[in-house]
Image (cartoon, rainbow, N blue to C red; front, side, top):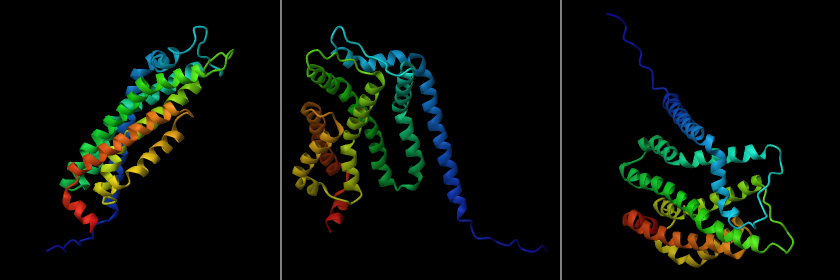
Length: 254
């Protein structure tokens, strides 16, 4: 009879290595998705930038145009916007890859709440970007251009304009994630809906502070960001009462 094989204890590094390999695979899939979408968008980069600039162009005086103050700006500005837009459009796939990576480590009740939050966070981000483009931009540009002193020709650099609108896109997109953040805080036991309601005055003040920091220095844009933050906070509290089981809230109060 041969000697029995010696049993070695399981290598603790193997599960970690497997997770790292899976993470690398999913990151490569995300990069591939963004790259493919970018390649589809790049031939139309100039047209897409024209759509981005439309809220400003509609309010410019007849004799004013957008300008490029750098040699490469006419190419780089549409290129950067097409790349950012490719990432925006790939967000559902990115969130799916995130979900597929973390789902095996979650309990069934955790999966029940995390998947809807991932989907809703993507939709809310898109809603924030759309709100900024269709509602906020026309009001901001109408105010800012109308406030230009007499004799000043308003001619915005295309690169500066791209930086400005992307900042507002991210600001409003992040602001519209308030319901998701509220639900996660309640679900994690950090707070409860009743405690959040008690802090409503501080939330409203904080919303206007965030609006002041993330938007141009005018009351219109600050209010247009602060009011949705407050309303979305109320929506998040209401959703947390429905999605988070009362048992968890009772444990938090204890």
